[in-house]
Image (tube, rainbow, N blue to C red; front, side):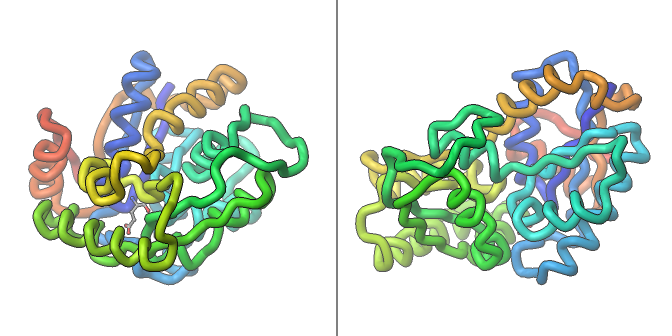
Length: 270
Ligand code: DGL
């Protein structure tokens, strides 16, 4: 059995690490579309086409279940994929809903009407494509009422992280937090709505201050995947070997991944 994990680049490794810790017996095939990253500045059709191609590649590896460890693909492409691309014997899951369930204090499958929740002012930090899709607000409206969400499109942060320029990434985080505060001076919670951003979590927390709760996805997605596999054990596909695939330059991508996760990782060409 193997499960596919997809991201446009290296950000999904933050999710991969959490799911590997939570599900140590499951082999994961990680697929990074580095040749086309970042996705966050692309339009929805483009993101849809690229994500379908990457998911098809993971199906070829025997991964019947694929997690889009990418908010941009989850926000801009997942619904259309589920409606018109994914056959009945395969599944593609996203990362937005586990985050929203945590924020709205819901268990999986709780389909009761939207209700008031503790948090009222939420800052959403995400890529331009995720913010403009408004998918986060749509999913939230199914579950909660009276929550004010202010989206901040964090242009440039994914590029800086992919380039390994953490000094630039930190400076951009500070300036995006300043921009958010001009629109919403006192957020109670901040959502890191891009899987690259946990790599900058300390910078977000420092810029936001200790009284803002920062929600990061990796552990929430890991719990939700464990729960899904318990309910659908047959969805772990036939693939048996853990591996890392990239559409980019395998050597360069391996070096960056090793730098981020502080352990040796070897990517092969997809
Ligand atoms: N990690 C992706 C996300 O969660 C990155 C997006 C990008 O490639 O711009 O949105």
